[in-house]
Image 1: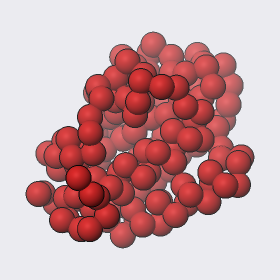
Image 2 (image 1 turned 120 degrees about the horizontal axis):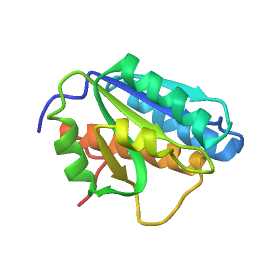
Image 3 (image 1 turned 135 degrees about the horizontal axis):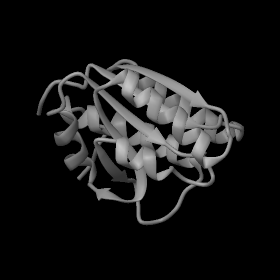
Image 4 (image 1 turned 90 degrees about the horizontal axis):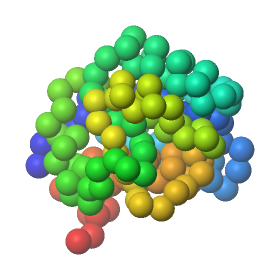
Amino acid sequence: MTSPVPEMLLICTGSLKDRHVSALTERYLSRLRHEARITVREISDSTRQREGDQIVRLLKKEGGHSFALAEEGTLWNSRELAKRLGTIPGKTVFVIGGPEGLSPSVKSAASQLLSLSPMTFTHEIARMLLFEQLYRACSIMHNRQYHKD
């Protein structure tokens, strides 16, 4: 399809506490690091407003095209995600909120809202799913065998 996204940043609220979810997340992160430069920035759990203020500051500082994960966001299949990522020049930023979700200020500051599913997931599961989908998207972009239609 197209070349990989050269740089990705994941901004997320809270750390991974479940060791099983953490192990899966690290597996996909390790694979993804062969495809792109990826950085994870964790924001400490706080109130939704404080978390939002920190995230908005980071979004302004980092620049790039930002996706805030939200249940009302755009739903894409894996091929659509790969196609979209292949068109973004420069840095791509993904934001995952905490247990209370993202503040309205974060949703407004993001370039786009993206949904992993109409269902709600914990921030830990959302992080793991996002990394798996990003790895899958890179595999699609490189015509690798990981994704099956």
